[in-house]
Length: 186
Image 1 (cartoon, one colour):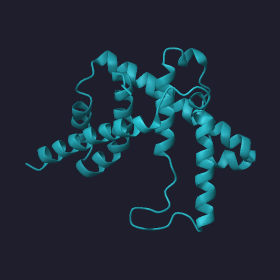
Image 2 (spheres, helix red, strand yellow):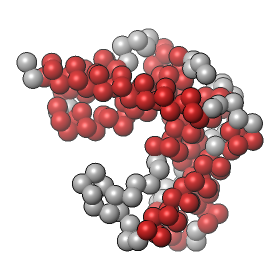
Image 3 (tube, one colour):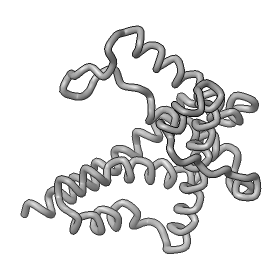
Image 4 (cartoon, rainbow, N blue to C red):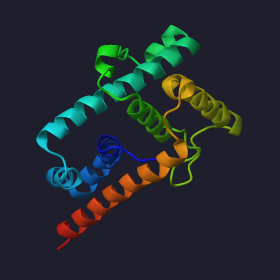
């Protein structure tokens, strides 16, 4: 499966924003501009502005769909505690310029990046029982069908192809962090 440049940039951006807190904590606020410039050096200003708009719309769509799925399952008082501010509705006008395949890729990657972990990196368990973890994981799996309804109805993607490309984008960010590390430790 071939990915468009905008689809690659979308995945790169997801990895970038996931790594940004680590860069800020490790190298300080002053390194964030350098990290940004190295990560997105291939984008023009117009391409960056378009990316930000598409990325914001897709995250809003994912959060809204997650909210709607929770609203279906939870009492309002619990939902209000969990998500105090209702996510905005993303209308078809906002989505009309985003290819359906790009929406499917984004919804899959966003869903995959939020898979519940059983334990922290240090081994600390995040759930009181195996059953509690399995229920949370089952709910997350169910969410995929609602969040990525386009892919369930008419799949234009092969998830087995998305993972290697997403891993490539992660490798790019790891390389950028490596360069940043070497520059900061000279």
